[in-house]
Image (cartoon, rainbow over all chains, first blue to last red; front, side, top):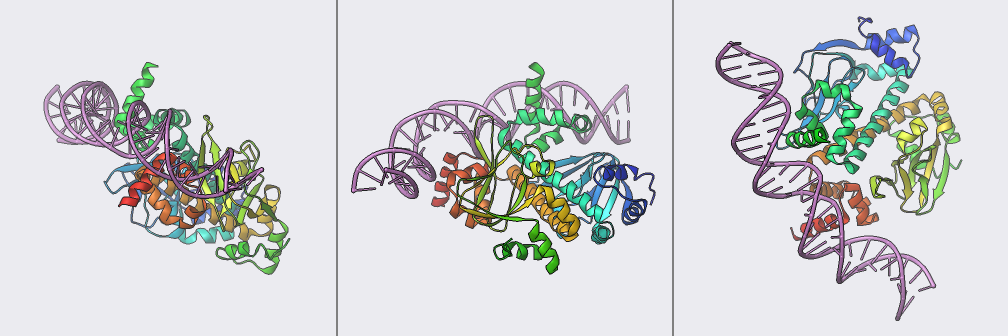
Length: 196
Length: 196
DNA sequence: AAATAAAGTTAAACTAGATTAACTTTTATT
DNA sequence: AATAAAAGTTAATCTAGTTTAACTTTATTT
C-alpha cells in the first residue's frame, strides 16, 4: 500500500491519537487506496456498505431517493471527511443511502471484514473511531437543531458561512436538496440576499 | 457502589461486550448511582456536561430554548437509554441543551474526569461506547431523513408506532415539540386520525 | 369540594415554502 | 460554431403548518 498517498490520513489520525511506526504499518496493511471517477457510486441504496471511506481528494454526496423518486442529500464529503452509509456498515444490512462522486475522488477504504481485527491489533484506532463518530453524532444533532429553529434563508446563510469551499464546487440544486428546499426557493432566497 | 441497582446496565453492556467479574468491578468503581426528582435538571444550558448518564428508571427530555424562548425537544430518554449533552461532554464546553427529568429518575453516571481512565483499564468499554454512539449517530441521521420526507402527520404516526410506551407517559405538547410542530396542529392531526 | 393551573381543542386568518410552468443562462457535445 | 442538455430564474397559484384567540377538559392544590 502506497503510504505516500495516504499521508493525509495519517496526519488526520495524529490529531486524535499517536501511533507508533509499527501501528501505522498495521493500519496501512488493513486499508486500500482507490480512485473513483466523477459520477461513480461508492455505495448504492440496496447494497451492503462494505467500507468506511476517508476522502483524500475529490467530493462525494450521500443521498437517498424517496418514494416519489426525489433525491435528498444528507451530506457532502470533501478532503479529510468520511463517506459511508454508517447504518448499513455497522449492521451489514442493505444501505438506505447512496454515496456518489461529484468529482474524481481518491479514497482510503477501511473494509468491514477486518476492521474489528484492526481495532484489536491497534486499540488506539478504536479510540480514534469513537472520537470521530462522537463528532459526527454531535454534527448530526446540530443539523436537527438548525432544522428546528432556522428558516430556509437562515440555513442557507449558515451553510454558506460554514462551508464556503463546498458551495463553490457544487451545483446550486444540490445545495437546495441538502437544505431540504426546492431549487426554485433557493433561487428566490439568493435574489433576496443580493438586494440586501 | 450498589451493584444490585446497576444490574440493568450490566445486562445492557453484555449485549455488546463480555466483561469479566474484575472488569465489572472496575466499571462499578468508576460510576455513580443517583436519583433525581421529577422536574430536576441533570444538565442545564450553559453548564458543562460532566456525565454520560444511563437511565435505570424514569424519563428525561433533552431540549433547548431558542432565541424566542421556545422549547425544542431533541429526545426523550427512558429505561435503557442514555441522556447527556454529548457535544458538551466530549469538548467540556458549555452545554446547548438541557436534560430535565419528567419523572423521578434513577441514573448511572459516567464522569468525564475518569472515563478515559476507565477506557484504558477496560478497553472493551471503549468498544461498547463506540458501538453505542454509532447507533446514536444512525438514529440521528434517520431522524433527519424523516424530517426531509415525511409530513407532520406521517411523523406522528411513526413516533406512535416506534415509541408507544413514551407516548403514554408524556404530555402531548411535548410530543408536538419533539416533532417540531405546534400543539394546535398535533391536536388537528389527532382529530383527523380519529375519523379515519 | 372549590378554585386554580395546566393541558388539550377548535376554528379563522395568515405565511413560509412547494408546485407548476415558461423562460434564460451556462455547460457539454458534436 | 451550432446544438443540445443541464442548471438556474421568475412569477402565479397553492398548501402544510403557524399564529392568535377563545374555549373545554383534566390535574393539582387548598
